[in-house]
Image 1 (tube, rainbow, N blue to C red):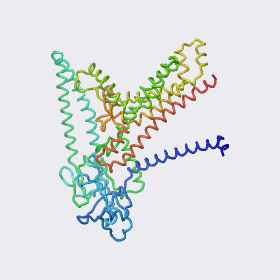
Image 2: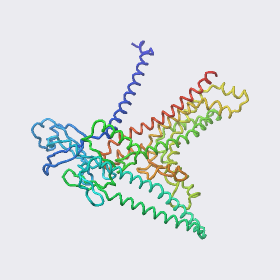
Image 3: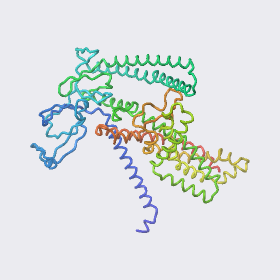
Length: 548
């Protein structure tokens, strides 16, 4: 037996089995996250329930969110009287009834024995709103400018009105984020200029005052136009009959979409599912991140990782080149290498504290004192932002890049360096033209590992720049276009916020899976891009290595 174990074959098979087991486990986790996350966007049927409650028989419109089997003994111990045919076990349904502003809870838990009837009516609609979540009801009419349209309204009629409202909302958003924001930024800049003259005990020039008056008048005109557009949008309502039979006015300016899940065909549901996924990826979050999309979080995550990569790569490569090519092999160098390796084991929250104290308060505070004194005490760079988050993660991932690059430099034969210098090249030219290109695959490997770690970090970002909801993206059409001082959103923090800080945990739970799947997809995409570049460089310099 021991002779067999001493052979390599059993160990090879054991290693292959462990690798396969790990791959199956990872694939299983990904499938679970994907199933839980993507199923959230499927248009589930909405039922009309007749439920027996303590107040009598009630009618509910709701979606079955979950089902669990409960033993009869557990129900009896809870003091619940069981009906015939339910003396062994029965199902307990978690039903989403929505209509948040009219109901005490978004969800209700109902035993199977208390459900008298369950019917999927084709006229029940799901109305997605900007506020108060979804609304379940039966659309019965449309009100325009205080007058109810009494003719028969169809689904196509409602969809047309909702499309018009969406166009008006887009126009309002374009006006707010375009002309109004531009005029406001120019007005703030002129007021700061006027304050600078006043602090210097100088008279404010007339042309500055004239420009301030002109911009103030323009801003007031744009603001009046915005109020008019909003007022016109708020005159229309959808008349919807809720579960109790009352007709409720749903403001059209709050309606984002409406669909009839019980009347949709399989192809219509598939198209709706794909459309909802696209909206999730491209829209902004709503309702304290428990609804809406995650585009700002995607944008912030990718932009932060790209900035971190730009910062950490030259720093890591230069440090590795110095340690391997220039530094002597002595006790001090060994201590530096040990310190670099140990830095990789420092908890990430410690890097966050360091970034807050050094980058934000010290560096950012001094920058404000030197260049933005007119805006003080309101900080510009002396507050958490995108730049400090990228720098903090660059310091966090720096050991990975240094170690990987130094390993790549070690693999290059010394004869290559000697041959280059024998032909008249200097040490710097040898490094730049031969050694670093040959070590570029190892550099890319370090960058891949750095991206994989940095993209999923959350703890340090909570101290140096990430926020629950960012008022605007770090990149826009206003000079200097990329605003490194702004706070940003992050997919990892979005998962934490939705999963643990949401006021409605049950409604937000599927978004945790969807955002987690999206975060993994973003990380894999960034890594695949880096791996593609690494493989290209490896093939490019493989012939040179073989010749040498």
